[in-house]
Image 1 (cartoon, rainbow, N blue to C red):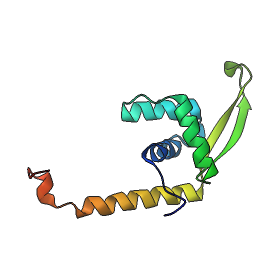
Image 2: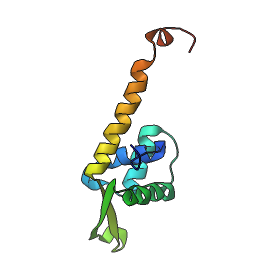
Image 3: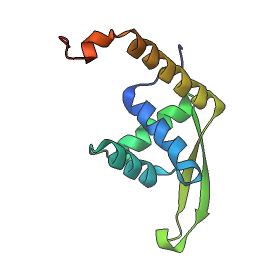
Length: 112
């Protein structure tokens, strides 16, 4: 998994891009993460993670059309690449391997 390692926040940002599909841009991703996690996330942090993910080849971006509601500015839209999907599957599989190894006793009122 070297080279595709995802930190927790990168994974959450990548998942939000997947959820939003064609409407994944900085503000919508920030709103999605805030809504799903209930923790405050700042747009600048999301942009930093998106650019890092783009450098890793896990997302791609393109400029959308200019709109009057944005004062003629264009949105940078993000999509998950095949490598990004693969990285998410690997992260999920690794987490599941660990979860599946936790003895059931620990979740049934044991010591954990």
